[in-house]
Image 1 (cartoon, rainbow, N blue to C red):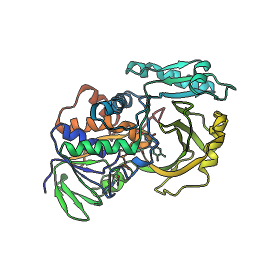
Image 2: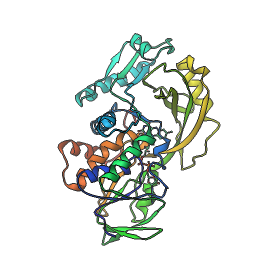
Image 3: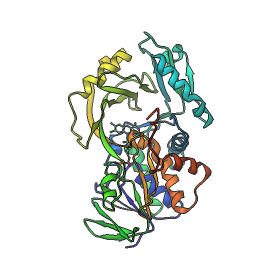
Image 4: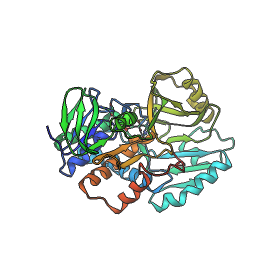
Length: 382
Ligand SMILES: Cc1cc2nc3c(=O)[nH]c(=O)nc-3n(C[C@H](O)[C@H](O)[C@H](O)COP(=O)(O)OP(=O)(O)OC[C@H]3O[C@@H](n4cnc5c(N)ncnc54)[C@H](O)[C@@H]3O)c2cc1C
């Protein structure tokens, strides 16, 4: 069979990319080794969606993602549990205040409704927050959260309606090339012809690239998440505590539409590798920090924990762009801990690149996300 485009992976990025391509009249084939959409890292995300970033490309892409998530139910009818609770970064240390205030000019320049506010406003948004040493914080009211499961399935349904094809339980074993030009893919079940392959393989991008001698800097590391029993709503925002502590960097949590508090933490040093078995370190580590910040969380019972992977890049920004060695291979990978919030926006950029319709904003985005950048600076809110 011959396809215009083959997408590797029906995850956070692959599914909306199929939808965006089909919107432009290009009907792709999406192949995933799992039995249904979102069974890779998509289902491990806690659902946070923000445009609060520190660089133009990420702000532009995620602003578009926010628009898509926020308007989805009204446009297409599916409830994806969009909750516009905003993101709040409470600040206790002068260096964090300085860093976050320093990002405001670029954030405002690229259209974010965001500000640094007084402790009293933070206390109103996070009732019961520990007031000792609270200096204020950044509030970004347009951000929010969604259900990863419901949104990837809503995108899947739309992609099917628009004519995309999906093959599940099929692993791509090789990108096929002729004279450094993509001619198709081989799977465990057969071969498919195409001139364009989109690498949306997430933590498996490195392996996929190796089939054509491409060395991509996507190194998976593992992160744990957890969800509590449901209780009456008592705060709406995503709370991000960016202070480091022994063994961890930032952690973040919010209360979803069902009243459950969902949370995760960034281990320090990172736990490199693909091990997805839960640890006994995570819960005591994150819970003690959360209860110190918001003591009233102490009575909540945790219902479930899980562990998943971030497809990490050296600087915490994604890799989006055509491969220079292999003609017809387009990377949309390395989403780090932000694949859910980046995906709908990135997918439209990718679709326009394939259709030859890149916009001026796309040029800013693809320059920032180029797989060939120098990886010299880390994104501040990665
Ligand atoms: C605990 C935790 C919390 C998180 N919270 C958030 C959050 O709040 N907000 C946010 O934006 N992000 C969050 N993330 C990050 C997010 O989950 C990832 O960035 C995102 O899912 C990556 O998307 P992806 O499409 O690149 O990869 P995936 O969703 O994993 O999709 C890749 C797909 O490719 C398939 N695949 C790979 N190789 C092959 C092959 N050779 N053949 C066939 N199929 C293949 C896989 O099976 C998989 O389905 C979180 C992650 C974790 C672990």
